[in-house]
Length: 189
Image (cartoon, rainbow, N blue to C red; front, side, top):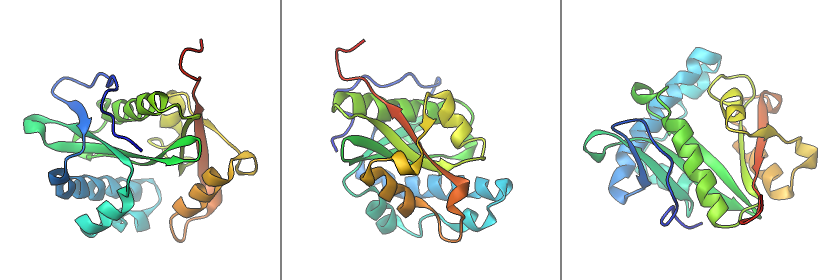
């Protein structure tokens, strides 16, 4: 998947910007992910609080050839990121994390909108993701952006397989949900 070059990026809160990932960002993005994981302990998933990345190598393996959008704060330092990969006709939001010190300011929303804009520019059928059903910063958050649940039985094979891969070890798949945001082809009202 291509990067967000050439797309109109969403408006961020004052003092922040969305930009492409630079290789030098990766160590800070690991820190962002690991800090964000700690929030799961407060929502009934203490085992996920320790489920971040052990190093930059594992972070780079996760992003693969995906497009990485970075929320940068003061001095252009990364404070959040989103990773999108192509799955068939869909752009799949593989990961979204914002450092808790910068949370609840609209950065997650801006990152998701950057993924949506890039998906529109590449002609994707829509954006998909898998997430927790009942954690406030998961399914309810994505619903505010227009995503809706897609029953696994109705999902294209690539999305169903991604859902199954993304269920964390030891977690009941029923606590997770596959969500989609269909996109209209360019030029369609």
